[in-house]
Amino acid sequence: MAESWQGMTTRGHFHRATTTLTMPLRVVLDVDLVSPKETMAEASAVPPQAKGSWMSFVKKSLASFNGDLSSMTAPPFILSTTSLTEYSSYWAEHPPVFVAPAGEQDAQKRAMLVLKWFLTTLKQQYSSRSEKLGSEKKPLNPFLGELFLGKWQDDAGETTLVSEQVSHHPPVTAYCINNNAHGVRLQGYNAQKASFKTRIDVRQVGHALLRLDKFDEEYLITLPSLHIEGLLTGSPYVELNHHTLIQSSSGFTAKIDYSGKGWLSGKKNSFTAAIYRNGQEKSPIYTVDGQWTSDFVIRDAKSKTTVSSWSHKAEKTTPLTVAPLSEQDDLETRRAWGKTAAALQKGDMNLASQEKTIIEERQRAQRKREAVETREWDRIFFRRTENYDRLKALAMKIGEGVEADKTNGVWEYSDAKAQKAVKPYREGVMPVGKSA
Image: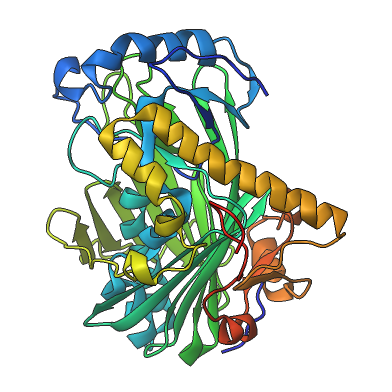
């Protein structure tokens, strides 16, 4: 397989500790979605004992700020035990759907199957990982070089995941999801720019590229903008904005238009979508409508007959397998953040803050050493590339730019690097404790 492709700081008084708030892919909060029929009491995602602190944070910190929310102090009860590097796994929680396009001979139908797969990923990417209320959390901010490695094993065979934090300023996470048996590979990278005016708005920068080896075919996927609703009620949820485009090298475009719940009608997380030949948006081949957190139906645009459908309640995800902590490298997410996560689970916010600070200080020291030695941190699985003509060509077809300046470069997975990657990946360099 070919490798190439293309502040304000507020001193909070929330309990006894604070943490830096940096906008992740799923924004500030890892939130639960609530039904319009639920009462505020039932839907409240913020713990009752933290209601006062939450409202103070929203009204005094967020409401008084106007600009880029690159960092600010956040209340500790919104901290998650999960790092943002793990979020890359949400692209492939249904591996059979992920690889399905590789088994379709018709290019038109392949484009439809790619769209279906993408739509199935949205719920976990942008809404809560938990179905329980009261679990909105802010992911841990990855350190440079942080890794999350895993695999899925099911009817689709083995599907592997490599996620790596490739940049710290700006924060950029790169990922590669690969199924060799079916010749399907997804790789991408993303950064975010968040702001607050009357609500939290997040613009995502970066792309994802899906490749089907059998057909030498690629699909460029843009990332949706999003915002947070429900902050003042204490039951926040994510809404996607505007649209996503999926451009195939075989000449098909998919456009997904997102719409939220209106004042008088409508449902949360609604969308419509269409697939058409390049430049023929008014002559769709397939149409789709539904809710990206619930159900959707794909129809033949001419006959209106149902071609395919999806229900999140009816479909089970395949669990991701990761190595036991004892076998993980010091740079792997769950090992590196283990003590911080344990403190958070116990509700010891002071200890969590201390453990988090250890990692942050170790990272600052590492960056200073690199500056003195005039060298840059060497990524383990990914590299910057100047050879992204195919990516650029697909982006131009839908009026998109690559914006490499906003992601510290264009990042690609390197098979050559992966073949050389052996634990310990960086002997003598550890996120916590003393160097060996």
